[in-house]
Structures are given as C-alpha cells and as structure tokens.
Length: 180
Figure 1 (cartoon, rainbow, N blue to C red):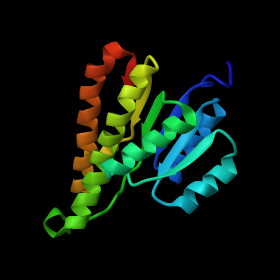
Figure 2: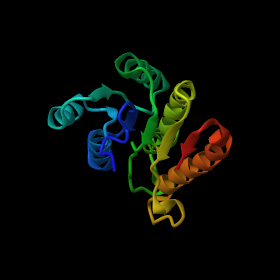
Figure 3: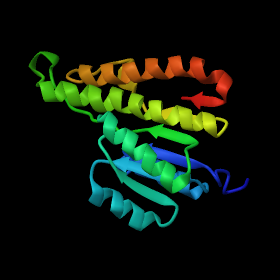
C-alpha cells in the first residue's frame, strides 16, 4: 500500500490541537496530506506544528463564530488552494442539568457542537465541489443514542450533528462528496 495515499490532498481538522483532533491531523500528515488545524488557542496549535513539522498550518478560530470560520477557510485557500477533507472534531463536553444551565453553557454547547460544524460544512462543500469531490467526517458520540445524566445538552447537540450528517449524505451523494 502506498503510504502517501493522500498526497496532493488538503485536510482541515477542527479541534486539531489536542486529543483526537491532534491524532487525526498526525495520521493525515503521515498519509501525505497537507493539513490545516483549527483551534482556539494559538500556543496549543503552534506546539502541534512544531512537533509535526511541515505541511501543517495552524489557524486560530472559534468555530462557533461564522465570521471567524469564513476567515479561516480563506486563509486555508491562500495556503493550500482548497480542501478535500473536513474533519469536524471540535466539541465541548460539559455536564449540567438543563433546568440549571446558564445561557453561556447552552450557547457554547450548541454553538460549538452544532453551528461550528455547520459553518465549516458551509465553507467546505463549495470548495470540495471545485476539486471534484471530498470527504467529510463529523465526529459524534454514543450519547446521541443513549444520553447520560447531566449530558442531555451534549447528547442533543451530537444528535443534531448526526441528523445533519445523514441529510448531507443524501444531498451530496451524486457530487462525489462522502459524509460520515
């Protein structure tokens, strides 16, 4: 198997500075892709760039802010010329009772976990069309099917992301854009 199966491809990983997002970015680089990682903390992203080397771009943004997402994708266009792969990984996971949740807890849960991926999808899909197709991975959670106590908001946000993914899978099927 060719170890550079993604050579010439451009991937975007939200939440790419830590945890699963960082691991995904590293694997994509290992397969030959150029990778843009998006996160909210510049120092965290720069550390990943220092550790992983070339073909990686760190872009600071809060994905729950549509203006910042538009700016980020324009920066990625300038650096890499488009995108082929989007991994919507950024999310927050907070325990709270809905009836006791603050406005900020609810807004950030749904802003980052639902609107963030939607904003990134809105930017990525036209770019993928220009390149003849692409792959979208929306990271979800088993809690979407089996919500845990105090995580109803989180589970609902992941359930919304799964519904969005199913709908897009059908919408984009004929355009060589795969959604999982």
